[in-house]
Length: 245
Image 1 (cartoon, rainbow, N blue to C red):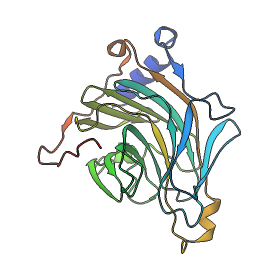
Image 2: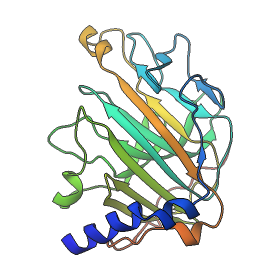
Image 3: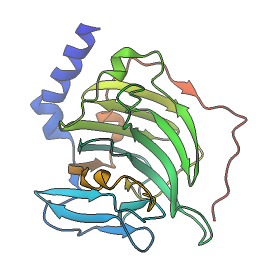
Image 4: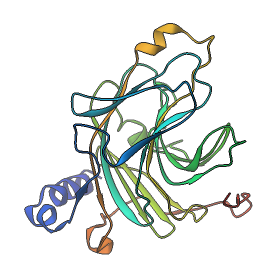
């Protein structure tokens, strides 16, 4: 395992690998160019600060709020840094679809969970986020290596490879999920700020989520995919597939 981790680090550090990848930045570090805010009124706090997409929860926000790319993506490789303070409940959602006006949340899609729990520690798992309901598609249960990859109050690097129905996730270079699923095929990328009831603890409003160094590959993906030692997990064929609205 240590040999695999060393090999992966060498690949990532290789000048040939870095120079050959046509990365495109999705965030300029200054403003919301290329992004929009999706959510209810009133919205959670959403702004750019210290070169990061920054959010905090505000009591009375009845739905999730999202930083959402204006552009949609099908197959891609995404890398993004995240800094989470306190018990902030967030995640990276991709291949999003819009929901009807009557839905409880404005976007549905695959979510790479950033787990606020210090005991469960399933950051890097994948679930199907469809409003007030969700279905875990791949957890980190029993995988201590993956459960130890994420660190609170530190910058963490996420890598998501979504190529066809194969969804792969790394957290700080550690493989955390390898799922085969085809419910969502194309849509924007969104960063979630959780809803917050009016009766919630006001101290939670001080917790922040920050995202920076957001970059994406959309061409020649086969050349730039990384090796992964997690076996692919096939999705449950009995899962209900939601129609596009």
